[in-house]
Length: 172
Image 1 (tube, rainbow, N blue to C red):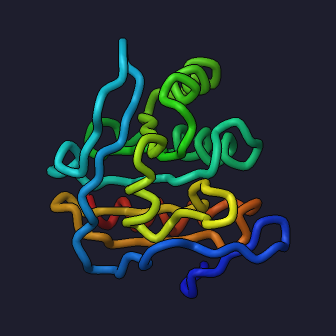
Image 2 (cartoon, rainbow, N blue to C red):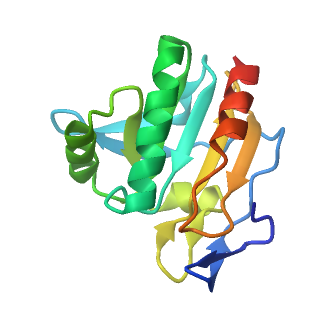
């Protein structure tokens, strides 16, 4: 897990913009966008009231990001409506919706940071050199407090699914 603001992409050092989130701190407010018969808005307030897992990926159209999203989708399906599950990337909302339809993603929703990049910057997850989001997993409790944070130190690697899911179950 990266704590220093430096990660790698295929072995090349990359810099994360912003301050990393601290465990026990309130998650910063955000405004993300998704496609649902047009462009809609998703905010932190929309997620409060249930534990939330936020799976952050650089782009759904890459193999590791697709694997991460499909794996969380299948693992989270058993938890049903008791949790919120969101994949965040900078892909356009329409591309995210196409991916979810093609891959039968139904236990997770997707949301995009394409407009302002504020989510990535406020959460310390923007890769300066690529202007994409780093691979990360966040778990928030029902009040929006950060209870788990993993920033994958090598962007091409997968996160620790078991630890993230354990944190989500503990927050439930």
